[in-house]
Length: 113
Length: 110
Image 1 (cartoon, helix red, strand yellow):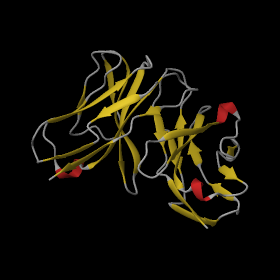
Image 2 (cartoon, chains in turn yellow, blue; image 1 turned 180 degrees about the horizontal axis):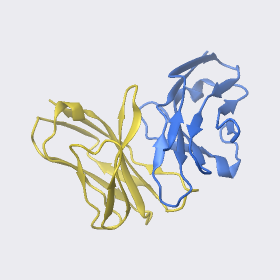
Image 3 (cartoon, chains in turn green, brown; image 1 turned 90 degrees about the vertical axis):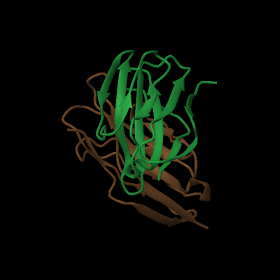
Image 4 (cartoon, helix red, strand yellow; image 1 turned 45 degrees about the vertical axis):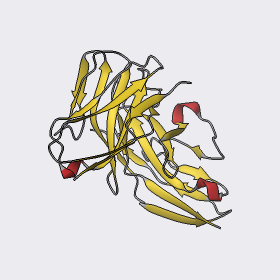
């Protein structure tokens, strides 16, 4: 089944403890992206990647890192999480070309205490 | 700059009533526009692409370049339509990111 898989689904952590949220897609999509979803703010893009070894900042990249060493994987790294990074995170992928919408993962609900 | 505006945070309608979720955009070129839906506790799903001119679950959306709008419409709302709806825009320069509006929560009252 074609899908985007995120892990974990839920995570509670403490301030400053490094964490990684994994994202993997099996559709051979070139384009991958991370969003955070907050009430009243909608979806805001954190980072995106147009292909392997190519990453760019989105609207809210501060406090996050990403890497794209393989086409299928696009992990999101929080080196030193803070409470304002408590949010619902979505990974998405797409073929290149403007006519294609995104396929989203199921989301990761992160709580930083 | 790309921008998507959804002026209503919440829209409540009675079952069987018509629905219109508004979306306006700002983009200097010819954009690609999408509607996504997010049911409670689920992932976002693509509902419509303007290029496809399709009708999904009774919803349609027409791109109006003069008014820079892409409103989502359904003639008769169903309770199962209750969800969060996001309008999104992608520029036409190749690999530009998808920009989302802040979303409208549709509540269909029985």
